[in-house]
Image 1 (cartoon, helix red, strand yellow):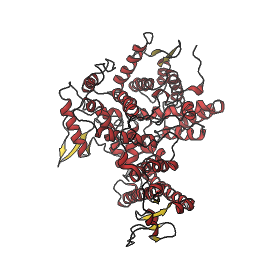
Image 2 (cartoon, rainbow, N blue to C red; image 1 turned 180 degrees about the horizontal axis):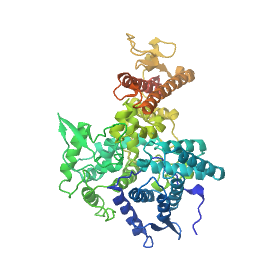
Image 3 (spheres, rainbow, N blue to C red; image 1 turned 90 degrees about the vertical axis):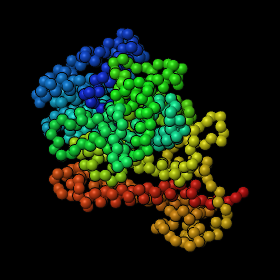
Image 4 (tube, rainbow, N blue to C red; image 1 turned 45 degrees about the horizontal axis):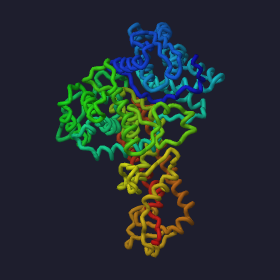
Length: 611
């Protein structure tokens, strides 16, 4: 008998690794389920069946996934017609299958059970007040008896609504469960996105790794989907199925610029009336270097097998055979081999972490199986990288990046394939994330930009900054200092003395309002030690300024989202509002730059006496 406590349930990210798309999700789900059946001959989980029986990996107990009970709940929802009732059940099956690909089956079983209860009490996420209040009361009632179960229910529902946001077009229930989760105040530190440190390191490794590869090599062809996914979906907010579904054709060009056409004609979100009249964009300009890279990839893989999608599964398979002693790639036969799927991307990302990030660059990476286990993560910090980035994470990075650059929410919605700007509510929860990434990137630029290279365990001269799981921004610059501090002649101390430090510019042509931000400003090691607290207080003041500017940006975004189509100054083309967004974005960049300059002072400005 399988005996696991509620506390042992793996915690989902609020962001779904998959997104529902009627053309692709059923095929992807069948692929996942067939692999599960191949793992154990006693497993029975055909997609068409309403009763799946799957054995737990570490016990001799089978769990039954009874979709008939969910179907019964859906049947009694009067606002759903018969066709939609059938479709909604298919959506839930696809969601459950996607979870089986990333979580322990016990956890998936519980999430399915919790979702079933919420569907019943909310009447299929009915946006009327009675249903909303009944749902809130239900969660608070669970909390009285088992706080953890209430919290897990909120996380599971948020993940489902991110997977299938057609059911919650106005984000009514998304907001409700976000707020309920916050009110529960769980002691768990749930990460919606990977830690900034992990994203920063992955970005560094991807850029460095692909620079070193021969573009005609099998290794480059095999891992090219990683390169394209990382560089495209970080700037264009694509759902994973949209990225994988980009068709195989020459990129359209106009006036020497490359454009990419996205498969959004039947993407989710197109059903129903578009009240905000937001025109979804399906053709976007991409950087020229990416366009050239894609064309080169097409030329290199045209002879490696037929493919309907831009990314070629057959090319990856043949490259895999050449690179790994002719071992075949594991893949179910339910999918067309001429189509590159999200499951292919998911597996490749994990392999890249294991073989490239781990073995080649020497970073320890938490196994995927442990990533959702908060009990392990909270107690164990031995891994350099605690969270692997998933295919859907970059879509959220892209949304945050567009917000960071001062784009209007309506324009962001158009680029992201949303017909409602309310959908951006989800991304406002992570406003500090991209700022932290920017801080790390600038620290890198100021301190060791030219020193990043592949880690060779046998090469003592090979240098790589190791940002471990325990690293904080307060200690990052100290780690950098140990490796890359510059020796500056003692004579610099005799230059123009200031209240703090010295000015080494003979003409003193001040270009900044604060001397400490100037490249000509230096400080002796002894004075730095003496006045370090004062300098740290100034740095904290700069960080407070960052938070104030970010708060202003968030207020502007919230105003536009709430007042869209109600007031003139919330219009997409309102000059004053768009100007304010751009100005605030510029001020945010400057504030981050100022903060980082003080945080990297030990490597940038402290005078070290020659010995």
